[in-house]
Image (tube, rainbow over all chains, first blue to last red; front, side):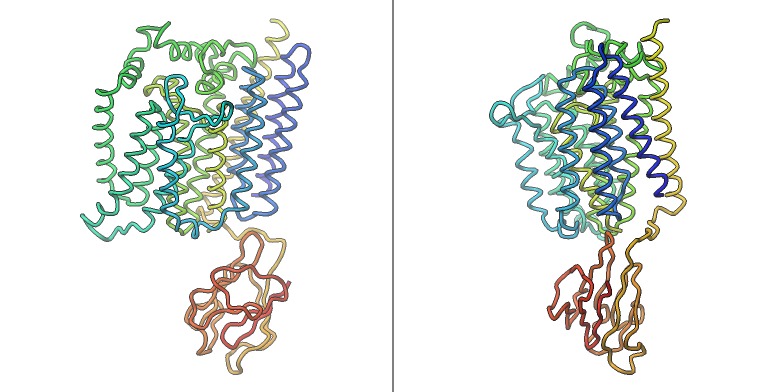
Length: 405
Length: 146
């Protein structure tokens, strides 16, 4: 195990240096900033891995490595698109790693944490409507909250985590031996909380997050009850909710009609999808090479559409590799649920890892026009402070759980 | 074919090779993990832990001065299925548990009737142990080696 871990870490450094070396070469004259950035990233990854390895040897060591690889690829791509954003992104990445380590150090045991059900509920109830009341509309969805003029964040990113914690605490004592009405009594309050959260998101026009919330709640429900009938009930409720939202809200109808036929209005409504598909196809299997393509033609290339940019410049094969990395991260996360005996930890581990996986699937599916496109970030890869911090927060909790068992 | 095109292609291929090497190693680790049944094998530890019996009631079957090495979790109690079973009416059926986490030794009281004492103080829940600490369970006294 130890040997493989070392090898994996060394290849990660090699990838980091190769990426930033290439970025330095394509600059004219040679861009020293890129090289410095690569070295700084290697040091941060090496040091954080050392801390986890040395002081918390019982935990999982690969969660952080996979997250770091994804972050490196993201930062390199962002640097090629917008160098100034990339510097911010490095700062966010370092802050994220610090939060991750702080959680592992400071958080009490999960058994203790499972008692604060109503605190999680309170935080969820605070975060979810926050953007609805104080939110500022950016790019068509009202999901940003600004404190002062500069510091802005997306409350739903943090609401996701508190919701998973709440669901874990609420469903940990779910008794499978009881029947019928007793089940419904236990499930009705969590179901109401989930529905209220999704309702808030739909009103904020943050459809991507609504989809993620649904996916996470569904997997948590199935893991804690292991009854298919509740899952089908949920899907039924979701389709009713979706058709009602389709009737009521114009932006839902617009998204669906763009998804049905993006080529109807390629220079207007369908511009982003069409431009993204062109961008991916111009890269082909092996990509145009870093700095050789035109990924910045696509709107939001560094945030929502970063996967299209990666596919164009690094190639489809590399893009599939990134997807496999997400799968591996998901596998490590779910594995955490296997090694612990605490029901709360299990539910939270499954919830958080499916949150990351769901988010990746929803945005990549949207880019390839498999599902309606909804603007959310690709975890770890996309530029964005709230996204990086909240995902590392979730990863820290996963790491903490992995020490049990 | 000019120089920039060439470097772009070379680097592109290098990136793909490195990424798939990472995936290969990750899958290898995953394979070993799955073969091991997903359960964690006791990891290699640099520091070893142990407790010594300082005082114990006679006829209990365990001699004074016995050193018990701790590698995995150890349970202490009156019942037979404990790792250390003490024949003592002041000891509960499942009395206490010694746990190693992150190379540190902890003791946890399992809601025993007469309590577990560390250095004369009754403990609640899980407590970290240091070398030379004295643990009192019923009439038996252990000392932590370290």
